[in-house]
Length: 167
Image (cartoon, rainbow, N blue to C red):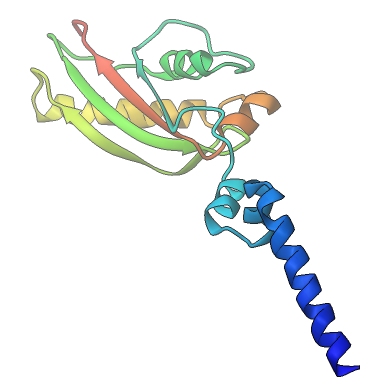
């Protein structure tokens, strides 16, 4: 009986090695737990770019009732933003990086990544940054549709608030 088991094991091993080249490589990688393949399976497929950016200018548009496109997000913030009153040419810019929740609320604290002072003094700078902050207070939460909210939740947005008009 000991001899038969030995021959049976050899026969099984010979069959496995004979069939091994015929197996597709993808099946082998899955069977043996290839960590790179497993990582690719776990990563979500990016439907949108890593970050979305655009310029927000003060607008006279009416606030949007429902936001269904990426372009509408920038238009809605333009409608909410009231640039500060003052005299002369401002030329200021602030770039913010932030993300939204599914329901349109700002996720976490917006981060200022760039500031261009323009021709203004420190009083104009304070008023300008306050006006940008108030735009998000005025519009929060943005009225995302369920579809858009699911698509943009947690994605980074880069908003450049640019006041390049005479004040």
